[in-house]
Image 1 (cartoon, one colour):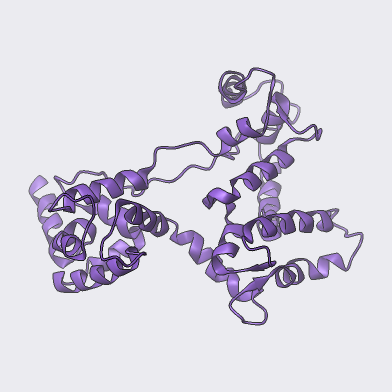
Image 2: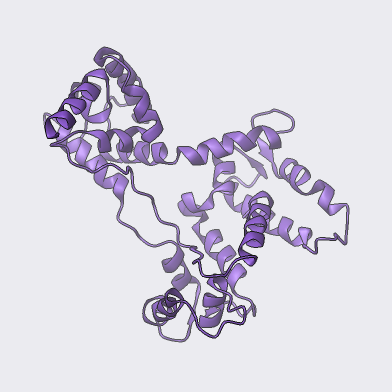
Length: 315
């Protein structure tokens, strides 16, 4: 985590210290559901709208006329067709859905971008990030709060270098996004695992044993009895986390734990949208095929009114 994220974490820890430590800390990175709506196309396409656009953006289409919705959808199709061959493939659609669902990630990067891009050149160098983040802290070799800012800076630098694909110590917006949110990028997953292991591996032997695993989630604080979920986690460690039964988790076992191979909701939705819209069954979509099925992809005043009628009929 970056220092800003770390300081937020510390504030949360301070709150936790004042209360009984019975809440489970979750280090597992799951892909969230594409929508909280029920996926039932026989009733409405609200799930598909949320999946394709993101829930907030989907709402903006509900006030548009069908003609306006089609026009905006057509412009979106141009963005989805990244290779500009005139077709939208299942892979391009999947990538778009994943991006739409990660809007909060990109919004977070936009909020921080101006703070670190000191010379306003559209890039963020390691020197810019280091000076903004650690400049004043590094001036004090013995800070009163007891934190080792030099060590924290070295950890951030290692992650920055991993995110910086071309090795020039200057981050593009995409590379800076990978730095701030490494769990979202396949090429950054090793650093996520490494940082997690460093956080939990208290005796620095390069692996995570059962007590370190539990200690990261729960502090006994003098209690004789553990909550039931802690006992369950002990069983999970022995039965599922420690795959080779050697009493500890190595790097690969830790990766399987915190970065599980979940069901790919975006891939399933992309496959569904192609199947429903591909009129000539060639496995890819033209702009015309997508716009022709606009009500599947986006809402409008017409679809919103139609769905309202369905709900009224149910009553």
